[in-house]
Image (cartoon, rainbow, N blue to C red; front, side):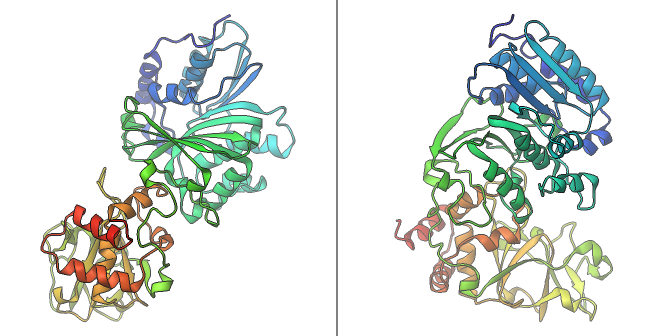
Length: 494
């Protein structure tokens, strides 16, 4: 009988198996399954998040791959009195999985490898009342792939009243439903479920049925699955089913070595704000960045200050016939993110992107009157220092009555017309402050900055925006330190 904490698989061996299996997988099949296997160091960290428990353990590993997560759990807690149920639908991976679990065959250990679709199997057990006693533990690295609204998986999930748009949230949601009272789930998933309207039903499902006990955040978007070159911001989350919500531990680390691991504890009201109908999940990266009042001057909604924000209406591939590389007679300016460099507008600009589009009756509905606007790029570049990067569009830059905004820009406007210049400059200063960026990162779970996210932020009143704008225009050199000091000063924090 093997003692808890002793390994049946040599350290590093499973990483070699994982890499070998990765090389043998068909890339198209791998992408179709949306499965990226867990590095051994991450699996070990995840296994260490479970609480010590005596008695029989019923472990679920859905989307098990080569068995790295189950092996890490057994290495940490022992295989005595453990029954592990591991789902893996890919035949090649399932063969590696069986070999991994076979290494733990001594003592009172039972392993079941299920090569059926987890969603189908879980929904069947739930709807037919065949959950049994439920799992006591679940350790998951679920597949990442969108679920179309008319798919079989979507219909199956709706049969158990779980409305969600991605396989990873479906796996976590079904795991919650299959757990015994007090059962613990540790999962590594994309951070995208933390915000956005599409994941609201899942957040409500999760928070109604389980408490959030621990969230781990990687500073780098690439570190969790760097062998697979995955540009995805991932978190590790620990849930406890049926437990009253208490404080939440937040840990951070630069990479999968966890050498600079830091931990802080927060009241749940700083993770999910009271009265927030969207149930956004905020992840403070340090105590100084926590709390609902962490954004200076943030008292007003956009409606309160008579502003709106929309995604740029020009979708270039749909209007390709009207686009022109250089401005010419009969065209108007077309602005892309590439036209904003080091805080300044450069138009026209030599790049791979067009600089203009034909002004015609067919295109007029996609154009805005020339005026002052504040724009924010929808996508931040890989490992960019700031997630929100705002710029001002000044009408004096163009000799045109109308201009176009490409779809990769978010545009602040007033009824699809320009806004007051001082307001545009003040809004850009506010959005470019470190305080706003820190606040946004607490609930933004992807590389995008969506118009919906910007609508849900709180903003300064118009008078404060105008004063910030006049101050900004009077500066010769706007450094980040100056911006942060001025934004803080207007909230009495300097």
